[in-house]
Image (cartoon, rainbow, N blue to C red):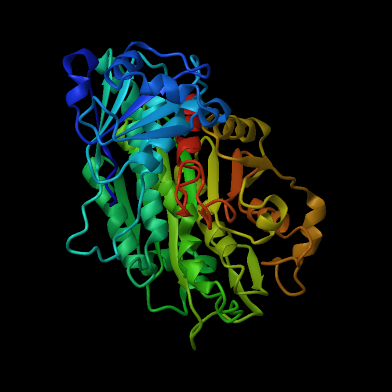
Amino acid sequence: MTAPLETTFAEVESVEIKDVPGRIVVFLDEDGGMGAVARRVDRLTRGAVRRLSQSPAFVKGKAGGGHVLAFPGGLAAEAALVVKLPRRPTVADARLAGAAIANFNTSVPLTVLAGALPRVAEVALGLGLRAYEFDAYRTREADAPAPNRAVRFLVRDPAAAAEAFAPFAAQISGVFFTRDLVSEPANVLTTSEYAERLLALRDIGVQVEVLEEPELERLGMRTLLAVGQGSVSPSKVVVMQWQGAGDDSQPFALVGKGVVFDTGGISIKPAAGMEEMTMDMGGSAVVAGVMRTLALRQARANVVGIVGLVENMPDGAATRPGDVVTSMKGDTVEIVNTDAEGRLVLADVLWYAQERFKPSGMIDLATLTGAIIIALGHEKAGVFANDDGLAQSFLNAAAAEGEGAWRMPLGAGYDKQIKSRIADMANVGGRPAGSITAAQFLRRFVRDATPWVHLDIAGVAYVSKDTELAPKGATGWGVRALDRMIRDRCEG
């Protein structure tokens, strides 16, 4: 797994700033006002910090932005980043400041002169999240310097800062786990390799079991099995349990689509862009990242994460358009389009989660439809729900974490589009309202008494441009929002 930055906190008065090597960071408020640490740096540099604060670039710059002083006189450091941050920064301001620091990080030691800065843990979170790079398959030149993988914050109260950062460190690790899984090529992250990586969560206290194809057949998970029957990679269901609230507490369930590669099956996709279908297991990766986060921060909640791992390939054994299969629930499905496979995986896993665990609530995540990208672009995930309270809990958490989400409709009227001539339902309903009919399909596998939210994350799981807190590629969207929702909703 990609290792997060090693983040430590030390007492600022114990360090001689002029002798700090590498790169340093200092903060000014929106008016150029300086705290005690910034004033020390300004004196050492003979007013260079103050002069920068009066420059048009600094005055016009946004909160959280940084400005570089190269080779500042009076300091051992090779460069100083002067970050503009309000006296009372918002959470977003602080995290953006951290992201600016991440972009300043190179191959030399990095020290953040935070002093009594408010929200220093949020700054460290933004720095940690933005510092991600997936380079497992990139050959580095022999003489190229290794990137710096540690940051030291010099603060007034190191113990308090470390305590505040601890749950954020767990989130960063969970997000990195998710990003790594989504970034892996499909010839490496097969269903078997994926299951092994999830089994490794046992090392941090998560109970993990893997259901193999004979057990899935016995359970009647034939819609899930239909997706993977054209692949040499065996289909699996992985069950992860975190028991942080004792054995008597009803668990909350997270369910994820884990299509490790999606060709579309017999309804094959166009060649252009198909290489990105390594990310079609993004929903399951978010579930895995949340489970890692909960375990690392010792969450006081019972949560079960269940993911269906399959590969959708075309061969002589593959499911054909027009085939009819029977779900674990007992409903029959006409598979009109084999590229609408994610809902077939989720249908059985959703039903299994309810049958076995009787959850207090349930959220599924899937890179399910291109239609949600047409509706919401790459800024927000689609939120579909049968329960207003659970939907609002998630939306509140997503807003607090800055992870875009938007409530979408459900309704019986959309059922007309997924009627089948020969089975209980069809797996597609045509182009109109494509993301809604997909959610409406899933709704049939959720009991009325189970509060449920479906998150269509096709537009936010993997992006082609850098975001504020992630480089382009896998984002880890949803790990922080779900961790926060579980903390707010499930932990006493």
